[in-house]
View (cartoon, rainbow, N blue to C red):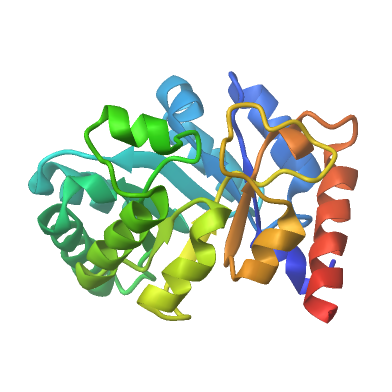
Length: 242
């Protein structure tokens, strides 16, 4: 596989540990990491993380922590103890919550002489459009809200954000090229959008500057998930060569 496959994170949005194990078994080595979200973690807990690690994969723990600063900082430390590659918090939790979590996790990692996970802040969910923000009393354009939250996260010490591919360039311009952008809402041109409202193809997102692409159904629901992942990696490699 080319280096492009390292940018692909597969969403393990499945019901059981066995379903997740089957996907991980077929995709480890073909993709860069696996995302464990609320459904799988609520049902299987740390066993899901341990299963991916046992197979030689990396984990993006996608639980979107959003609570008082101390609670989120303690949860972040537990995520780090599990050895996850990255985890996320909600930027709407505010700068104090993000900063306290970053400090606690990095301090713990330093004391343990272990690598600290990347800490990301979720900006605006890719299922949300302008009307959804207006319902919450946020009347600025989606792009402005995303960039404002990205700056807040950067200033609080986060490594990057989770944002739709539509805002990648704006975030990189506002926060710098080293600020990590992980983007869901990735759909090959032939795939259905499902509940994604602000989507792009893998090549478009890479060209816009995405660091990691979270991909679910187009791979996990494919007749041959490994072949689907390889096809996306080849598309990314071709984009990089342009």
